[in-house]
Image (tube, rainbow, N blue to C red; front, side):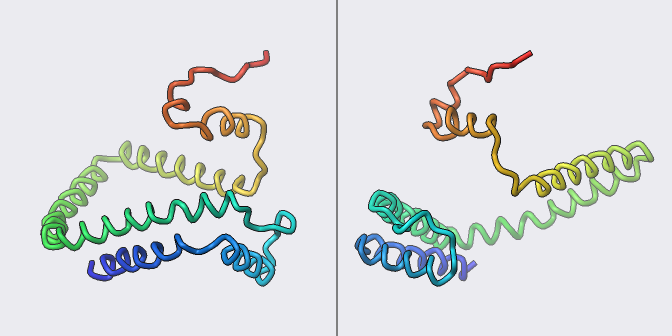
Length: 164
C-alpha cells in the first residue's frame, strides 16, 4: 500500500511541472517521438496548439486527483488495512456458498456452464471484431450521443430510423 501512496504522490509531482511545458517544446518532443517510433502521422504537425492546450491544460486536474488519492490513502491507511483484513473471512464465506451451490445438482452445473459459454462467446466476438472499422450506426451514436455532454446524451430520446 505504501508503494501505491508513493506512486500517486510521484505522479502528482511529475504532472504539475509538465503543465508549464511550452507548445514549442512539446511539439518538438512529439515530432521527435513520432519520427523515432515510426508512428503514422497526420501530416507535418503532430501536435496542434489546441491539442497542446487541451492536453496540458488538464494536467493540474489530473495531478490534483492523484494527489488527493495519495493523501487519502496515507490518512486512511490503517483503516483500509483493517477493512481488507476483515474481508478475508467474507471471501471464504462466498467461496463456500458457491461450492454449496455447485453441489445442488446437474441443473446448477448446466446453468453455470451456460453463463460461462455465453460469456466466452461474447469475449470471442469482441476480440474477433476489435480491429473492424466502425460502421454507420456506431458513428451516428458517437456523433449524436457520446460526444455530447452526459446530460444531453442521457436525456435525448431520439432513435435511429428503422427501414422496413
